[in-house]
Image (cartoon, rainbow, N blue to C red):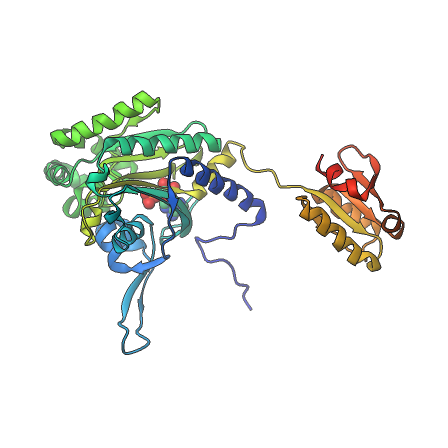
Length: 427
Ligand code: AMP
């Protein structure tokens, strides 16, 4: 029989890895809480139309990377429905915002999420078919100030703080504005005209994009196309006054707060719903897939999926990429060591060993429980691999209440009265 393995592009995270994942998630929760974000959890599958209407039919994600299936009706009252594993979470959050009429509160909604996303991509380092994103959205009616450039700057400043607190040094914030929907339409025409002259020398994807969605040409990674792309008009020249003023206010607030950034005219991002500010944080330690996180403003998204006017801005970061970056910076978590390994001398002492372990664990210690059938040598070997101390529990120790503890770092052997054991092992 062939052995079964995790599906290509998916993988298991073992305890040696999840320690770091948990640290990343705990840092995100702690930092986001200080900015008054609350957690939202949306389903991992949604109606396919949600993604085609928001992310966009012409994007790589929707056109070729979604896991979609026809969910057959099981009863006459049910309809067959096209469902999709979420490839990203902004669409789901905005759907929930509309469905639960969160705009009716008149307040800005600050929502964050942590969870798996699914894209049928070609797997490589830092790119998986199931990957986890941490993201957040700030969304609300215009009367709540959701359009303000201050919101953009605050989100970017929060991300800078998060990466700093996580210990990721050397990040680069790349910033651009893709303007309003009208600016983008204008720029698309300018680009289309410019591309007419040069596109025949470009890759097949660019030739297709030049017709369907010229903006996407700027995302092209084919090396031979880069010199041609460098000569194309930039979007900054197609922005109207309002978009220009908005972007200038974002950068002015970042300058004031001391958050460094670089302007990148080509940063249009792969999703259709972005308007005005777009950004990515990149890191050199990641190699080809160098984006730690990306995001931007999406002022028309709610309306595009049938909701009220609800401008917003958000981001998503790949947890896998944060892990890889921390590993490259040697910030990976050290394997946790338990405080003590309890070695019962003989199977008859197993129940007493469980009782002692219970006492110590309730006192907050991390304890590994040995097994009375082990020879003492075997217990020492197991303990040496995982624990700072070994506690020997024989008949004498049980009767006298004085336990023998060996501390591996010093080699010291100490007799400790049972009531003092927890304090001793915590040192
Ligand atoms: P996107 O939704 O494409 O803007 O992606 C946002 C972030 O999610 C990226 O910057 C990556 O960190 C991460 N990401 C996107 N796709 C993948 C993937 N296939 N595997 C791992 N991380 C990913």
